[in-house]
Length: 277
Length: 277
DNA sequence: AAATATATTGAATTATTATTTCAGTAATAA
DNA sequence: TTATTACTGAAATAATAATTCAATATATTT
View 1 (spheres, rainbow over the protein chains, first blue to last red):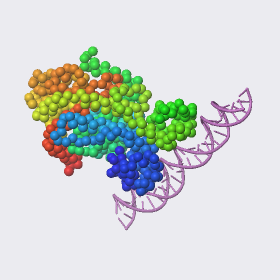
View 2: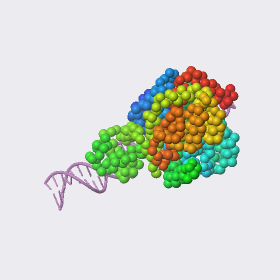
View 3: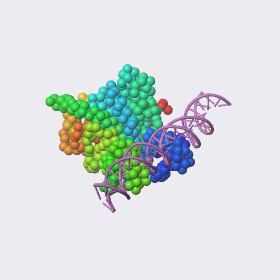
View 4: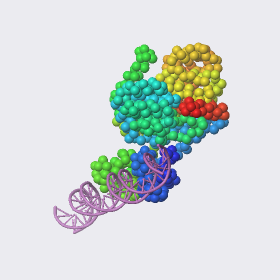
């Protein structure tokens, strides 16, 4: 998380960030001001760093660091090289996939998740929008939402979505998906929704981006550096799906009883169409 | 530590100790007084407990709990129940996701994987076909394949695919995706392809199924029993994507040099469209 | 059983530490 | 060059941990 943010941070916060990366252990036994002094800046910078990371204050930081220090290193991301055996390809793909899910888990901001759930639940209609690979995620999300009896659309066409937004109800929600967070089409549609006073949720890689900053509620997936192969195969899709799963589960749990019924109905409907019985 | 001490503790401290054992997670986000109240005693008892445990105050306790709380080894699938906290929802979704990837890994038949790669590489065209959720996987696979310069189609419409197959080249491959392996549309199209002498690859859950038995090459994902929630959220999609990733990686590796170039070209093309430069 | 000593308790107080505020400074845009 | 914005750390404030202490319970001694 810190690594990801490092570049975008102002100097004082970066000092703190670097100090933490180098001496995680000592953070656990220090106060905010200690750390500020140790890193040649102030305690305020520590608090600001926590804010920038989107976490819940210094205590939360400590708790997370403590957790990470114990964790057996799942050897990070490994790129695949030419001439590799099928066996190692599988191994690396497996560990990269798992890693990206774990990293995304760590990144979850529970308040934000909760807000997302409570925004989506009463929504009349949820419009998922993404281009290219993210369009697939949008479709997946739509399918899941329909299963729990939630009206949802998924478009990849800017014009159609623009029309939709222009005529949307105040209780609609726009859910913008863009891994980079800089897809121009998504930015435009988010801006339009904002202008129209429609609630917006973003799903982007962790860090600052235009799409995220336009959103009322920001959800993030872990971002792993880009190597030529990885960028095409992408664990990013996996983490996005994973996050959609969580959102779905959370929503479903909140309205458990209702959902069980709806799923049963859906099943029956599918069975009916399939087998005519 | 707490467990060991439990007996020797005075009542108020024991209340705290038990509370911590039952709700370790919530300790991390609470203050001393919160915990005191939650456990029907006072904040002072929390501090005393820390002393009794011989640790360095409440902060130290938090840090230790955070360390101990680190993800218990994923063990099998766990269904999500009503009224669960967001935290446990996330935990379970994470462990289910990881589990399904691990299980799918174990299921991989390397000879079959190799045959798949060597069938797909020389193919003129790969037609991915799936209905519903599997249609999304088909789209994803298509996108990936296009990136490595492999002609690919992805349809969810039976008639279109049937036409396509009817006119297909002998070097084309039909890639049928169906989690259950019993989707009637997929079965029909697979049968048609077989009749026409076109090579077929299936991606289904592990076990016997009509789709798999119609395929020349059979790829499997792990199958986890069905609980009401899980079936809707589905780790199955995750494992399917994971397998597509592996296939993609394997193919890409075999033709590494070529691929690197293609990916670069694709990037440039995307950049060109996006920014016009 | 009574008296005394000892241990335990939580409310109130104090000390510590996290967080916010704000005025000054540096960087950036106009 | 000036205006604007962003960044910074010292100081003020708020939140929270830790201590104190009087009250009460429990055990021990006579």
